Length: 212
Image 1: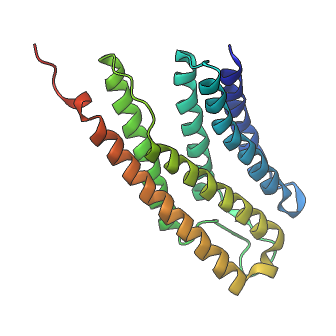
Image 2 (image 1 turned 90 degrees about the vertical axis):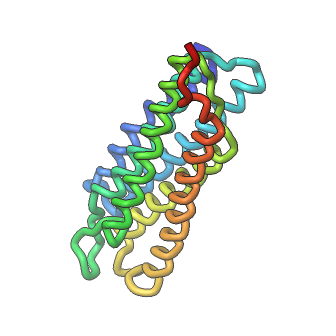
Image 3 (image 1 turned 120 degrees about the horizontal axis):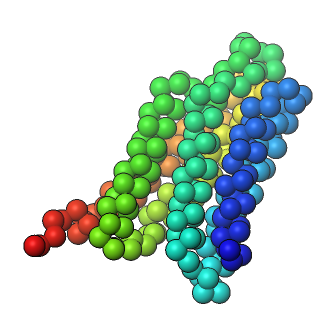
């Protein structure tokens, strides 16, 4: 296993670790959420690092092509499911616990769109593989991934603030932080839809029937 593939493997290993810390409510002050955010940030950096090393050193392998998208999808799916499904204990204030994404239907809708896109593209790539067609990642996919990572990281930090400092940020500060989150989430969802549509449109030959 070469260096880029080892880095990709580290990203996969970091996923259950950041999930554990995000759910570790026994850590006082919400610092489990902060640790989760830092681990998630490191995992995101490995995504850019492994690809850069693989291309610059000519270390692109079939194993890397297999592991890298799986690692990315697992990382994003784990993050969005945590935000939607796991309420954050509030440190006092008007609530004992609350989801980071409120109202909850916004988070659910975003999660469905993001997860649906990843599943559709995975199936699309599988069809291409059966026809020996190699589909390279495009610019839209990279921009989409970047916004997904930034948005999830923002909400992990927001979760830390809710658990550790909710009375202090309740009111105007909470509203401002929520609006910033909504803007990032909206951009992410839009880029998710556009990247999926462009990926299929640019490789539509995959769905065409082979001539016999």
